[in-house]
Length: 254
Image (tube, rainbow, N blue to C red; front, side, top):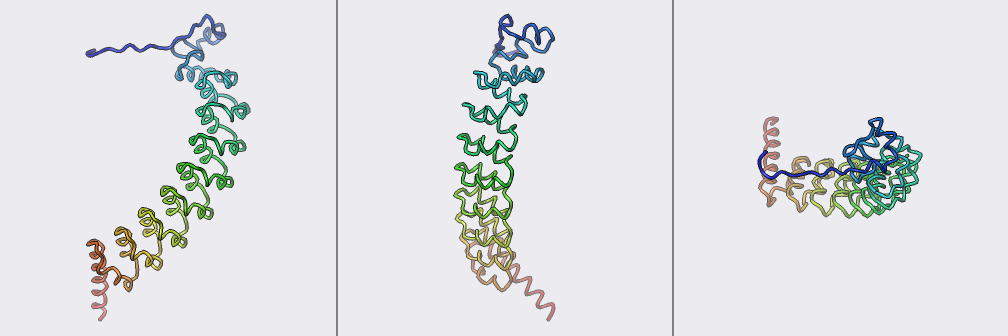
């Protein structure tokens, strides 16, 4: 081996002080430096509980946050509600993943956004509207993806474009007119793709050329005159192609 060699120090516990030395150690269900609940090593702790899940519950209130968080993965569900107000957000995140659904409303307003994201992803759909005003846009994105289509209208004016983008892709096409004046061009582009040819006329004078390009391909020919002198060459080109094609069809029938 060339170059500088690195020495990795493996955390080791003193087995002489461990209450498991006469149990799991003798049975080969723990091993110093590899599978141990007493060291502050997430990997060793996880290996220990994986082999000895029946000990997890007694560590749910341990002083070391990582030991508590890992114990949550293996502890029985009935023991988890007691940790809903745990002082560490990593523990509460682990709790949010495993708690029975009936307990999740207690974590809706948790100060940690990842806890709330997990709640928004798991909570029954009928309770989702209680979280639409969450201060974090990522939580609201999760909510927008799960809310029933008929309940999305509360998020049409959401301050974050990522949330409105989800709304624009999911609301019924007949309701897209509510977003034709959205301040974000990316939202209006989604609207232009989904809106009906009849309603697309309202976007003919949009400030974004991509929006105009999309609607130029779908509005009725009689509406294309508004784009014949468009400042964007690609828009004028598609208008000319459509008008020329229509003209050729008319000449053929004549």
